[in-house]
Structures are given as C-alpha cells and as structure tokens.
Image 1 (cartoon, protein in one colour):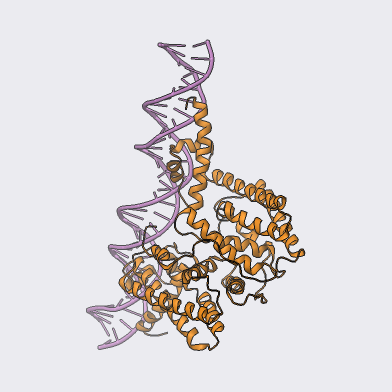
Image 2: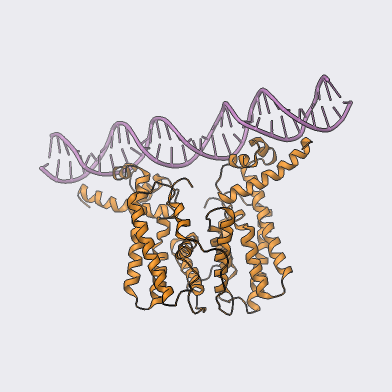
Length: 207
Length: 207
DNA sequence: GATAGAACGGAATTGTTCGTTCCAGTATGC
DNA sequence: GCATACTGGAACGAACAATTCCGTTCTATC
C-alpha cells in the first residue's frame, strides 16, 4: 500500500486490465471509460501511453502474444491429434483473443512488431490445421482462414454477463466441432441452452 | 421522369433501399449517409420520417415482416422435413433479416406493432424447430433460441463485397447444418473457401 | 402563362462526444 | 523541509451528427 512507486506499478496493471475489459466489451469505447473502470484519473493513462492509439497497439500486441501462447500450449499439452486441435480452439475462445486483435484492428495503425506477431500466430494456426488434417481428424475441406472466421463468429456471441457469454461460446464451439471433426458425430453440448427470455432483453434501448 | 408526384414516389423507394443498405452495413451510420446513398437531400428524408428513430422503426418492422414471409414460404415450399428446415435457414441468411432487426434493436424504442411482429416471428421459428425435431431430422438438444443466436453469428460474417459475404455466410451455414442435422454427416461445402489474403485486409485502418 | 404550393437540396444550428492538455494537489524519498 | 514523480479531474477544441430552416425548382391548375 505504501510507496508511490508501488502504487504506480499497481496502476500499470490496473490500467491494462481495465483497458482489456473495456475494449473487449466495446471496441469503440472512450478512453475515459478505461480510466473510470481502472479507478484512476485520465492523466494516469496518458503518463503511460502517449495516445489512445498507443494503448490499443499495446493491447493488440498482448492479444497476439496470448494467442501464440495458447496455440503453443495446446501443442505441448496433447498427444491425441483431435484433443490438440480441440484444445487449441477451446483455448482461443476462452482467452477471447479475437476481441483484442481483429476487433480492434482497423481502429489504429498496425506497427511492424504487430505484423511479425501476426505472422507468427498465423504460422502456428496453419501448423495446427495441417496436423489435424493429416491425422485425419479434421475435415479437409476447411482452410485455416475458415477457422479464423469461425473464431470471429464465436466472438460475436455476447449475451448476459461475461461468464454466461463464455458458456454460450463454448456451447456453439462444441456444435462447430461436431461438424469439423472426422468422423462425423454428435456429442452432448456443454452449457445451459439459451431461451427466448434471455434474448428478449436486447430489444430495449440503452444496452 | 415527369411528374413531381412520380418522382416523390420513386424517392420513397430510393430512400428505403438506401437506408436498408446503409444501416445493414453499419447500424450506427449517420442519417446523412442514407441521403447521400439515395442521391437525395436530407429534407427528402425528413419529409417522410419525422426522425431517425422513425426510420429505424420502419426498417425493423419491414425486416420482421420479411422474416415472417421467408418462414412461411419455407413451410409452404417443402414437403421433406429437413428441406423445410434448411430452406428456412438459408432463406433467413439470404434475406439478412438479422441486420435489419436485432442489430438495429437497442438503437431505438420498440413500438407495440414491432412487438407483435416479433411475437409472430418467434412463433413461426418455434413451429419450424418443433417440426424438424419431431421429424427426427434436427438434433433435439438445440433450442429455438440456439438457432436465433446462430443466425446472429452468421450475420456477423462480413468480408469483401456483399456477394462474397453472402457466399461465405452460406458456407458457414452449411457447416452448421452438418452439425444440426440428424443423422450426423459431412456434406460438401458451398462457396470458395476464404484464404489468408482475404483476411489480411482488415488490419489497416479506414475500413 | 401566372401562381400556389408541394418537394427538394443543402447550409446553418445546436448539442454531444471524445481525445488531449493543463494545472493544482499530494505524498514520498532524501 | 523540499524537489519531484505521480495523480485526479476540469477545461479545451475538434469532429460529428440530428434536426431545422430557407431559398429554389418544378407541377398542376386556373
């Protein structure tokens, strides 16, 4: 608690966490929302990042590194080819890296470093795809870009609080995996199914 | 060409078409964008709708009616239970009614009439779901609300021009249908698969 | 053909939002 | 005690967008 330096270090983390949460929820959120969420003043933000763009770049870079870490983890953790692939997809959905990368891209200028991370991420994705196809567990008429778009679709699901959203995304991921896995089969879906009441909320303004 | 009245009638349609296109592409678009797209002045818009909200309500109502029409059409056109269900889903994706309803909802106050249309749409969706499950062609652990969320996921796909976007949506719909249909099976996917190049476009600002 | 008025285009108005800057306050380490 | 690193938040200015307003154009009618 004591020490101005410790406070500053804590704020570093506080701000990044808040920024992740805020921009994940709304990519176009104002920078003041980040400060408020972090419980700090605006100047605490501007002391660390010269502009909003710089903060977004940092976030996006972190997101890509997270993606890479998740992919490598999946390759390390599993021997079974299908589990490797499915573990990768579940990991990406869990980490919600899409909300930190693609959804933010286009709102700022990508740096050189970002491109390199993206290339590395793409390379890993391709490798995971290839391994799954060659092992005969993933249907071969699907491309790595197909998978990227599937991640985006799953990231578009947003309903209720963060936990419920994650639950539903995993439900739909499981559904997708049923149609990706070879041989074809239906497996039980995780998570409580949504109902009409849950959906009806979205018709009122101010959401 | 002649007749101020004829011109006005033509503008009615021009404006609605433009509004559909503009708000489908970007639900938060300014009203001036609609006027520009329609090739008319702003006052031509305000002559017809007292406010932006009124225009959105009109659009949303039309979207719901379109949804209803598509659903009824599917029930009328098909004898085979699976084709009825799949035809319905393909029709909804084609008509892109989600971009005119849910994506706009929350940006305006829903009217009484809107609620009634929504109820009718929901009723039809439930009926189609029930029929497919009872015929044994749709896996039973899926709810109507699941299907609604699947439509939203598909509507979130947006890449390249309008035609390409539609092609990709149908591709992912086909993938989903593979995991919805009973018995499980993989069928050929329509549309050209996306590739990394197509995706890389999205990293630059101003999109 | 003169004219009332419907319909129009688009500039002006007004309010809001948001990124960024600025300044005064506060606590720390020396 | 004091220089200073850090902070909170008000103030600024630019951009944006809904709506209003006004001068103009065209048509239908007499």
